[in-house]
Image (cartoon, chains in turn blue, orange):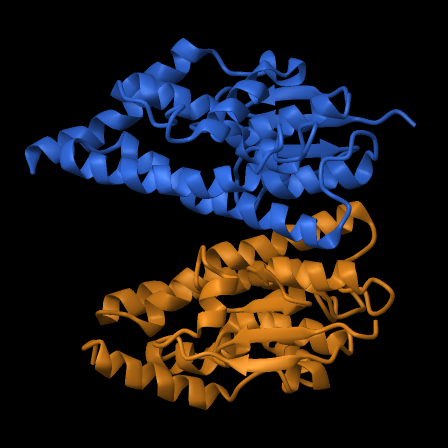
Length: 224
Length: 221
């Protein structure tokens, strides 16, 4: 049966990148629809009426929303190159850390971007503490998934892209090879993987985008 | 399975802990229930959930599982020989996960605006948001007896714990969920008829009393 797969995404969304990575690992063909979130398409609003967000994966006309939900759907529907561990306990751990990444890492990195001076120093300490917790999950493995990229690597993958860009904008290292050696190595391994390599959004565009996002917050801090 | 040791660390008013209790009851599992005092967390809780230090935590043969919806999925996947809580079809499963995620991201925070409101405006805002969420959920429920269809399942479990807090929301923000969302309250009544749910939920009036006491202590009233 001819499978029809469509991915609604923006050029920069880290959550959409998760789905791109997963589809590539599974070797699946799909059509990409780039959205401009300031003028959402009728299709997007039809497929995701509740949250009106990207990414949305549409499989034979049926939409799946929320990137982590989409990852599990992809893994359960296409059995080649499994992404999640098989053991229920390992699966629960992977889900726990993916949630931690979304709730804590994202917000702590954002804080670093939109602050300056002492506030930024404190934000960096908190971000590094959270990243250390994730690093401990690597133990002595190449990837969170073991020898190959898995669900948790994909869930964290956005950090590899965004952290590098953030470090360039604030002109400071967040993931220090000395402080976070295992995570540092993981970021390199993940980036170098042939599946991941060509999927990153254009770096220059990302730097401009985040610099622009940062401006109003810094202006606010100065005027206080 | 013989020889399984299950311990649940919980605080009875938690809508999240209720999810785990219901799931364990649905699967007919024996477990030890331990009430936590969140002002004085046990060494076991701090050891088993060092990252968040929160309840609920399910400890299975000494290994902890944290985050209520993750625990419920674990229970469903480990004891997969009876009473499935999630659908088997990947698409239906994805829909169930989407709705549980929606409930997680929206309802608790909006509910807090009511219970811990600093002023009438905040309570009013919370009430509006909670009703909006309920209306969206009513849409998802449709004419089905449960969110999953004919069978009580994951999304129902995700939401029904909030039943304990309905009386507090209604009384503090002065509104009736029944009047605004009759379909949802019909679903609520239906779920409460299940023994597994009834024995897992605390008394809503007792929850309200605790909220009032806490509000006084926090200086909100």
